[in-house]
Length: 206
Image 1 (cartoon, rainbow, N blue to C red):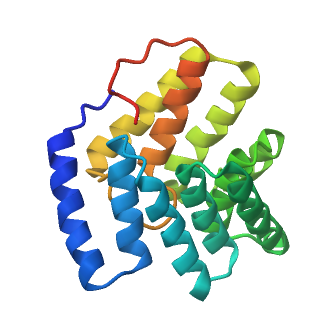
Image 2 (spheres, rainbow, N blue to C red; image 1 turned 60 degrees about the horizontal axis):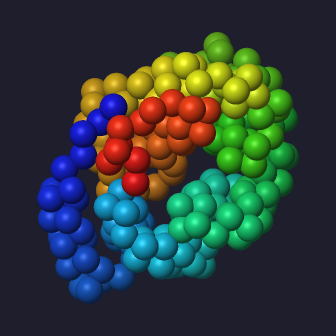
């Protein structure tokens, strides 16, 4: 598990809010949203929604809808998130004839969020012979999808620990912006383990 300094998160919020005042943009809204989310502040929702709104004004490809769908999911608007993720899935479909490495990683993430767990192993198999950079995230997500189907608490915890190690080794920050982050998957795995009965220490989850 990862110990989070809420004092440091609040300091980062102040820094990013200064940027928002100077130059409002989707990245700053996402960063503030992520920090407030892990602080348990409901104001995070509005920032995630703003990030999605601004980003989709200029980007309408498959990865854009995946990003926006994840932000709206974090905002707590699950029906809207599902609609955006379905758009992402539909836009990925034509690419899957000859997908590149990143396409495969992102379709695996999209399928997981849409609970299309049964589709994930085939995409992971295609990725098996490709660059290790993409395997490091996609394969644990594929394992997590199987853990959902098997209702396997210990596997969910093991995958959460994998993501926590990746966060530490890569010094991944909560405020990192863009595609789905290691923090997203760390939380998803922990919540699954908790839902399956694992005792997650207070303060570990947002």
